[in-house]
Amino acid sequence: MNLPKDQSDLLKNLEILIQKTYEVEEQFIEFKNILNGVIEFLPQALWMVDSNEEIIAQNSKAEKFKSIPQVGEIELENRVYLIQSSTIQDKTIISATDITDRKRNERLIAMGQMAAHLAHEIRNPIGSISILISLLKKQCPQNELLNEMKSSVFRIERIIKST
Image (cartoon, rainbow, N blue to C red; front, side):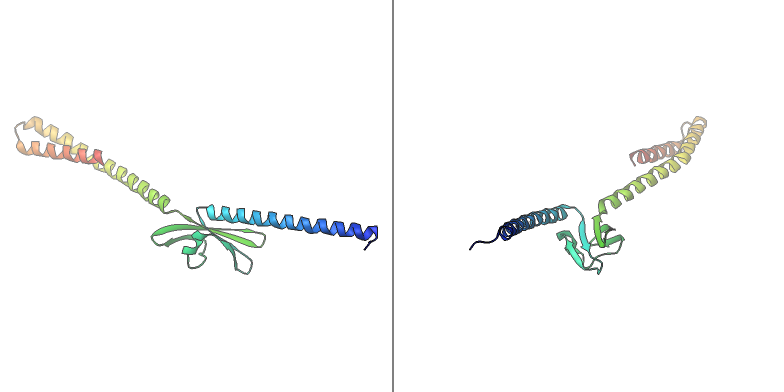
């Protein structure tokens, strides 16, 4: 069956177009697999939600959450998570980042600052007491009570230094 040249060209172009759609489909599938791999690789729990609040995609870390959490900080299974969201076109990306260690470090820093302040406040009167004991010791060198007081003050100073 001989087709006119335009029909023959049209069929060839149609075959080329069909072949290109297969190639584009393969590239799309490859790109989708890479994107899913990246989403899974992220350390955060991640959801992608459409305008109807239907989940389009999520990684395995998101499965520990019963539902998509609201923006802010939440506690789940003795862990603290920072929930953030971003909207791109009509899609919303929501992430839950585990900040338990950061929160613990913040508490430790605050405790360290409080301990340093407390040590400073204790050192001031202890210094005064130590000076007064030294003055009394000059007046009563053989007083055992003053020796015991001096020993106790040194003990308090060692505790403060070690703290």
